[in-house]
Length: 146
Image 1 (tube, helix red, strand yellow):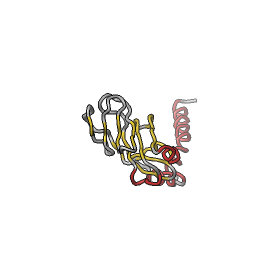
Image 2 (cartoon, rainbow, N blue to C red):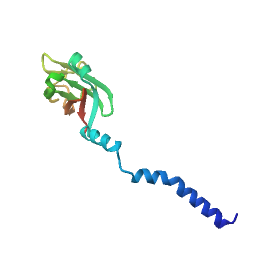
Image 3 (cartoon, rainbow, N blue to C red):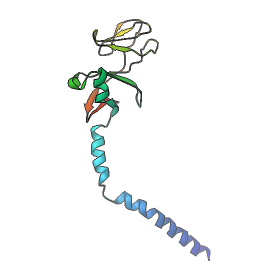
Image 4 (cartoon, one colour):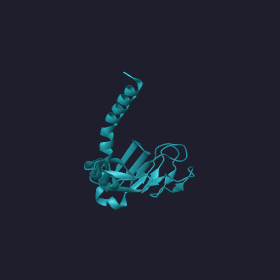
């Protein structure tokens, strides 16, 4: 086999092996468009749990979510009043607890207190808790990541 014939065969092989990729890239999307539509509704939102988990105790703690720890407080019946915060105390890093009767977050380590909106009510913490928007959709609880 001459060098020119060899190069022609290699080129033909490369062309043949890339043909399925080219066809897939140029073909009209069928299932991908339906998936992108459903993802568009949750774009910028991260699922942290289910409505069943939230309604069981009135709070949902997702310690290992992709955005970090998140504590969601509320119920599906009062979905417009959901509260979502990063439950890590800004003083020493303990996990705050939601006290529903007092309507505030309290740190068990040094008694720092935070309002529903995460603002410091009682020191030693100086910085507020990070807050998130929360929503319920299709039986799941989501928080806004951006």
